[in-house]
Length: 173
Image (tube, rainbow, N blue to C red; front, side, top):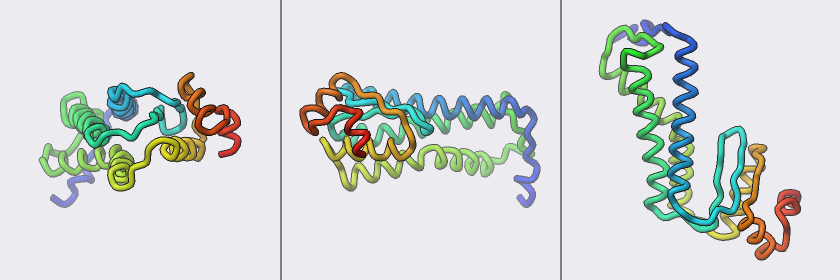
C-alpha cells in the first residue's frame, strides 16, 4: 500500500470547493437544528466567524448534549462519503481501498466534530447553568468577535438578574 496517498488527484477544483462549503453548511445547520429542538426560551443568538450560536438559559439534558455531537457527525460522515466516494467525487483516488475510505472519513468527521465533542465532555463533566452558563457563553462569543443579539426575553432576563441592559453587560465583559 505504499504510494496510496500519492495517487490522489483533484479532478474538479470548483467541485471540491463546493463540496467543502456544502459540508460545512450542512454540519452547522444540523447542529443548529438539534439545538433548536430543545424548545427552550432563547436568551440570545450570535453570528461570528465560527457560525451561528444560540444561548439558552437552562443546562441541556444529557440526551440533548449527545445528540448535538452525534447528529452533526453522522451528517458529516454521510456528506463526505457521498461527496468523495461516489461517481460525483471531485477527487480521484487511485483505487477504492476500504482503508482509504475509513481514514479520509474518520479524519473529516474528527476535524468537524472535535470541538463539539470537547464541549459535550465539558458540559457532562462540569455542567453550568443559569447566570454562570450565560456569562461563560457571552465571554467565549466575545473572544471570537461574534456579534451577539439578545431576544426580548434575554433583555428582560439581563435586567432582572444582572441589573444591566445588554449593551452595558457587553461593555463590562
